[in-house]
Image (cartoon, rainbow, N blue to C red; front, side, top):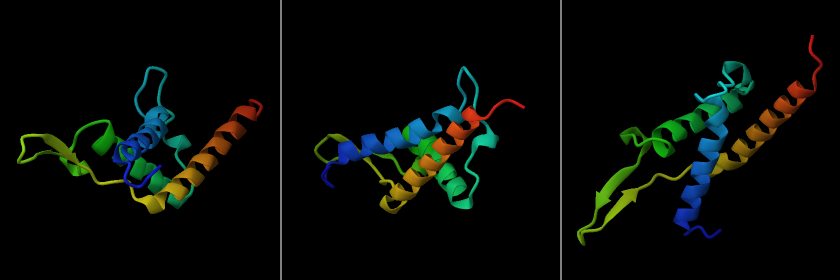
Length: 112
């Protein structure tokens, strides 16, 4: 993907934040809850970072999220965007892999 592909980048960022947070939020089958948050400090910080992106930027419109509607002099409407910090992407991937491993291990454990 080209760096200039703003629409593609925004779509992927939205998917990362919203899809990661879906099982932790309110839903019909229940939230995963605090027990399943990442166990290490970096993972917990990324977990909260993605929560903030989901709640303040992508799932809802909140001025704290950095999104603002802008009207151009030509009469068009655009939107200001603060992109996801690129240096966090590898860390987010590692956190998601660690979480997936925890979930797999939990499903393979025999009930006590």
